[in-house]
Length: 199
Image (cartoon, rainbow, N blue to C red; front, side, top):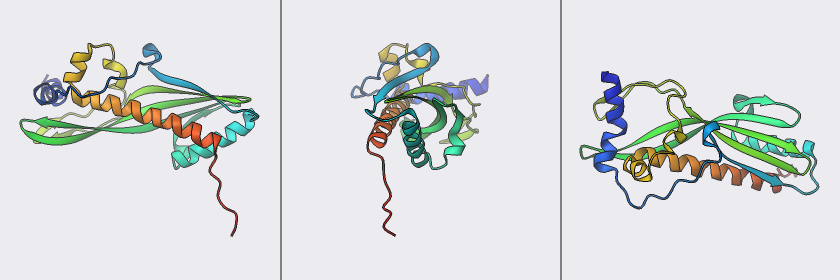
């Protein structure tokens, strides 16, 4: 019971008292909240074969994730599945003391390939496991993987979401980083980075 109280205190109390912010932008609509699908996009490439697009995508992923083997969880002739960690942070104020907290989330990225097109889909896979910690002298218990999801509060009234601005900041940053990833994929696949071979 004490652990539950501390968890609620750590996430809700500071934001209810000090976290209200009328300038927070609106959250984007999730494509399918039931499957935790945030968004998907079909990117078209005229004249590129399925095989060419897979090679380009793997080249992009090798640069974007440094070690593709560590995040690659599945691959077929027409699909690549990547599970990566996305970090978000939020500012908070608790009893007059300011601070910042970081929360890491698993994201599943599914890329499907056909001749001339790639479909990328991003799913919320919940939080990365966290150890117990102390925030300004308050013990916050750890949480196992998948205890929280970015999308879990999406159906709550907007006013309630904005009151809990720390979680709102996590959610906005998560969405913005995924949107940036889509732009990165499209840009790199359409204009692949090429090393000079003038050595």
